Image (cartoon, rainbow, N blue to C red; front, side):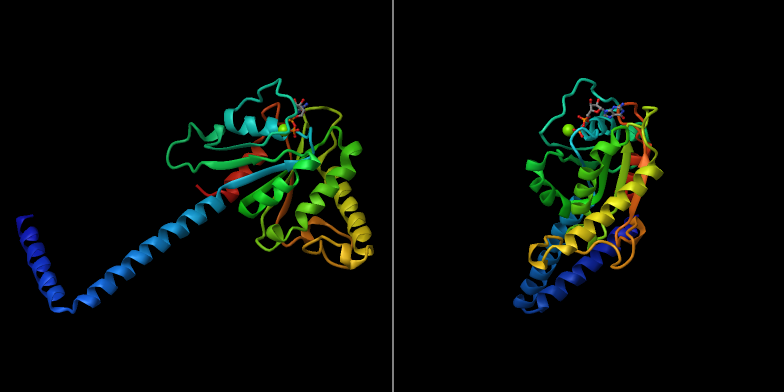
Amino acid sequence: MDEWIRQAEVWVGQAEGWIRQQPPEQIYVAAAVVAVTILVLIVASCLKSSKQNTIVLSGLSGSGKTTLFYQLRDGSSHQGTVTSMEENSDTFVLHSEQERKGKVKPVHIVDVPGHARLKPKLDEVLPKAAGVVFVVDAQDFLSSMQAAAEYLYDILTKATVVKKKVPVLIFCNKTDKVTAHSKEFIKKQLEKELNKLRESRTAISSADISDEVQLGVPGEAFNFSQCQNKVAVAEGAGSAGNVSAVEQFIREHVKA
Ligand SMILES: Nc1nc2c(ncn2[C@@H]2O[C@H](COP(=O)(O)OP(=O)(O)O)[C@@H](O)[C@H]2O)c(=O)[nH]1
Ligand SMILES: [Mg+2]
């Protein structure tokens, strides 16, 4: 041990001697380069982590986003919460992973209210998203299908979603109800509705088109596998605590 320390002291001495021989400008430049590099690395890692752990909960009002948010965070649905217009946003370790040992990365979950007036909020959070959960009310699906498809259409044609290949999970919620529709049915109906929407929107003069990216493959009936970003469909029930599909999705896209 002593020997090592002596050896180290010799090296430090040699290094000091060498540095003294160098012109001072060179030392300053070297120090500046090191400082700038460290700064760049710190900034880059900050930007990266803020981008990689945000999951956006979207979907129509009443589909169950807020219930899902609480279920993921607290493992309970806080029964009695009214359909809110406020945004819930928090960074936490998933309730289901609190017992897990080892390194667990917290996730930043943003529950974006479905109300039309608050849609601009979505443009604000989407660029930061590591994944988007689109919540659908599987029980009351038919009456809200068109509105849900329009909302989903907006998400799937956003440049920030398509270009960055942000994965989307369509979460068919409220399947604890016996009258709820299956995820296969919902998937098919949404594909049909999106196909119709695409046709009607491309029929409008191109000046009015606000779609940033075209949906699917032109000339082919739309289905989700045509999307450049991954679109998956799953089912569950937020209020009944059956949210494992969402937890899995989060884990897959927010790496611990
Ligand atoms: N049966 C059933 N009801 C649910 C489920 N998730 C949410 N709800 C109910 O649906 C209503 C709307 O839920 P909420 O989370 O406020 O929806 P949000 O508007 O999308 O935030 C509330 O009355 C919830 O109790 C579910 O999985 N099953
Ligand atoms: Mg809500």
